[in-house]
Length: 491
Image (cartoon, rainbow, N blue to C red; front, side):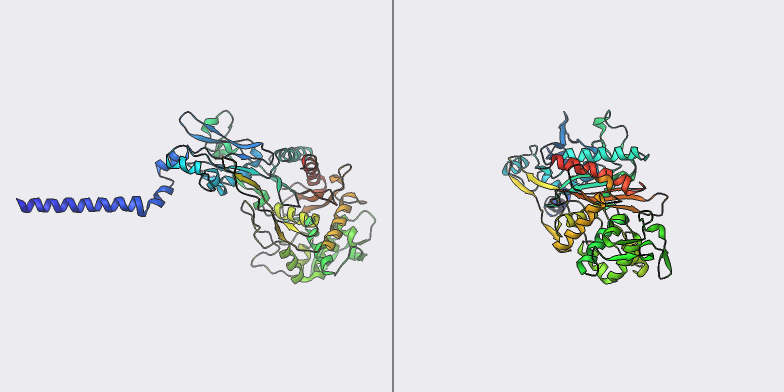
């Protein structure tokens, strides 16, 4: 009898020991993984009651608010769908978080940079109040950019959801004022069963390409906007000047490189013109001339200056950015590739953000600013715990070179037969460069980069419209309207 009792006791001890070990494992050893496991019901219930921080524009306009439901569920409410790919969205179940809602989640959820009051609330299992984020975005400029794109798409007979992108930033400090990627969607409708009236379609009905942020992740041939970099390199190295002359077929074409012919239809010269200096070749966007400029630079110098302007490098930003470049892995950068890359074709692939930074470099005397979206992060008590990371990203060219390229860009908009005439703003000197990029599709992409006022710039803009046609007639009017808004509302 005693032996049976002892055996039973041993069994109980062993079972108790195993239970104890199991509890220690789950509550101590693996507690971190358990607490962060998205399948943890208690975690989900806790997180969905966090009073997430709000997101504001630079002037305190609410871009992301919150709605507290009777059961305590807290849902983000997004005010401007055109910022969908920038701000992103945050959900607790199927779709997770993307954009700034993801990268800034530790602040917005009250887990990083928190005050003692937030920490105390967490300990007592009370609703945690997250930190508020203030962006550099100006909601007025953002809405002007949306209106400009919609207006010009309609004016040129293009569909309302034609893929397009536009970014405006201050070249002095890199602060992004507006960022639009079309088509976009309403982030409030992500799992938005509480907003049935507002959400005409669910997440599954939104086309996948609407989730792409074309400003930061769209890679396009830049067309003639890239001549801005080529011209900068040619002047900075001293191999060319704005007065360098091209006459006859050297200006008009055709031009043959290693058996590849660039036809005379690529010269874009005014009717009857058979010669041009480098300034006018830039104004008129002569591909024949710039193919030769690329060859004069040579492979090494051309690639060197592309790298100086941050192509081939990942640009630090508050959102992930695709790497722009002139080289395609596995392909030879031969003379044909060099000549065509020099005028923005070939293997060139750039983001609109990259081109806005190139324009900003010319605008700010050869200094490329670091782009930023977050102006400040504040705790509920008003203490600043993060934000402005502005600074210098690179110094690819000297101030004298930048001054000469600025002059050329001003002539693009204001000179005789300049291709950027649609970007003129009464009473303001605008600098710019058009681009019409062949993509292999029926219609080329329309590009424009610019800044204003030319001598003391406070805004730089890059615009691309996929399949839009001529940059001069489609993209430059969009940029003009964005610049006008930025100049009107600027600090």
